[in-house]
Image (cartoon, rainbow, N blue to C red; front, side):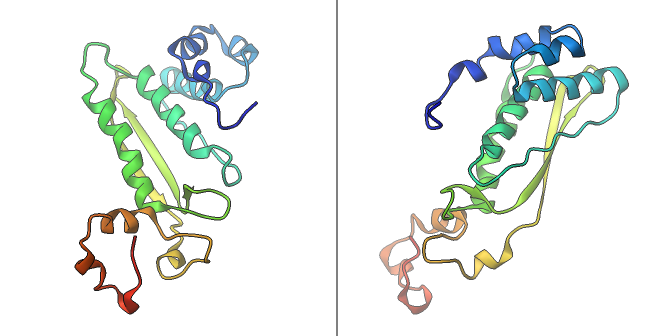
Length: 181
């Protein structure tokens, strides 16, 4: 499998629907291994027991944790969507991720978009199981990166984005005349 080739069927609505249609836990585990298996099982626990659930996404640098997290969020948002409501809330929740990543991701030797922090994303549903909001708690921010990094690495993306629109005169204000972009 080419890791750089998108496999659209993995994220297709029909794929997600198969995990919803699996009648019980046994049927769910008989489907092909997929993050949807875990997220559907957690969503069913919320529905049946009314207790919070957590999913932990871990792995080495470049293993796909960020993309997996996006897929899990999309799935939960899709499962908990008020079918009559507009997608404004859904879009707002999904749009927060790139903003947060700019403040916590940096180029490393292993990965050009490596998360240098942990995050805990909570997705909130009401009693009807409709999505009503989300919040994100960050932790373990790699503070040393703000003052130094190795020659093959870069600081947090947000620093480069902030100064990308700076004029040449503004860029000269940098200490030691070092360029920011």
